[in-house]
Length: 121
Image (tube, rainbow, N blue to C red; front, side, top):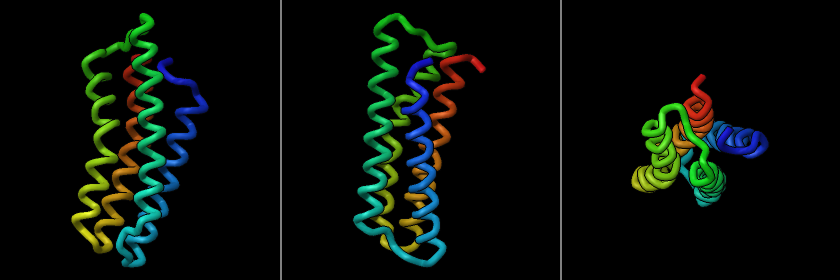
């Protein structure tokens, strides 16, 4: 297991909460606000923490079933929140909020995929 369960669950819950909130704002026709950026930043911090723990496990001899896929997911896990925020800033309409919602949803899915690739399930 690359990261502790509480960190995975916390990351998933926060990412899904951000996705639901931003999705609600998009549905209401509202553009993203600074609070959305802060929330997406929280997802980014959790993602970076997970990446740090996973890399530490790899350095200490841990191995994923599909190492190249795992490393690719780690890179995507780090880049997606930044890219999503950048795209949302370029689209100051309801679609910016939708981009943030989808970005957070993808981060939650990546947590699950990282665990699956690590364990080989």
